[in-house]
Length: 88
Image (cartoon, rainbow, N blue to C red; front, side, top):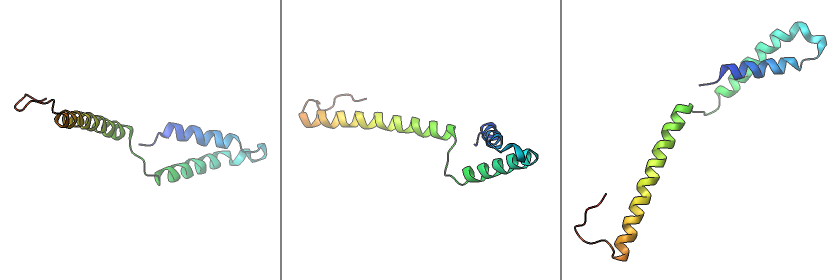
């Protein structure tokens, strides 16, 4: 999800940069800035923080499994694993 508070803050800061002679249009410009920011960010291929964290956890678990399998293969290739031994 987009952080609308951050977008509002950015739109407000952009409108603060408007020259003093355009104070009457400041509100309209702020609304236009906000709409343009939302439209631009909406087009980006973004994921939520929750989805990112889930995928990160999956990747970490997959990496752990891969390392375990690599160790097992290395042990098997070196002949240090005895047949019938209990494995993890």
